[in-house]
Image (cartoon, rainbow, N blue to C red; front, side, top):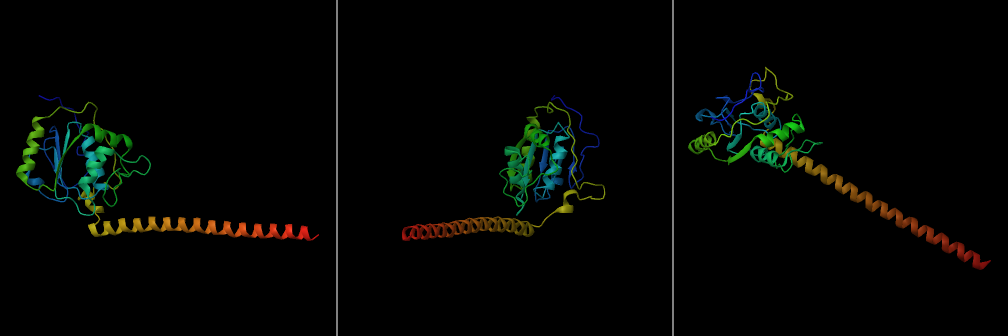
Length: 237
């Protein structure tokens, strides 16, 4: 039997929209935009995750606080606009920028994990194997993969449970991440606004450069003209 370790006290440590199973199971399942978790069995925790920021933070916090979880199955429909499934994969593969906290390589609208410290991201990368079933809503296929992961259980991660706090998590927020869910349309608008602002900044920089060049040319012409007049005046004398 695979070795197991104790989870953090009161695990799962972050509230949310999920179903809890055996905490010693090596599998966690995120069903993204789909609500099919009730039809699955054998996972330590299973539930949807709709946002590529606070939602991912909460999943990460609940996973790294249970060292027995060694597989994260990404299943269900991808979340339009947020692209949460791809953001999970990018975080696991590339990590996050240590300063901006942006998930490197994520294509979602607002892929930032501001509440997860660098060591938390690294722990997430080291503890888990990601199983990509994104856009799969076939319960039979997902259940089969859960069973396969249980059979391959390598035992608990070598380090003890890591507990991090996620801003915005409180007892009154029964829906967990739902309190900050952004609609796909809003997310796309926000992304386009950021792109427009970036382009405006670029245009401004070009204009400033052109203005500087123009001013330099005018200054050069004036200096040349004054020099010519001075030389001409000296010859006349």
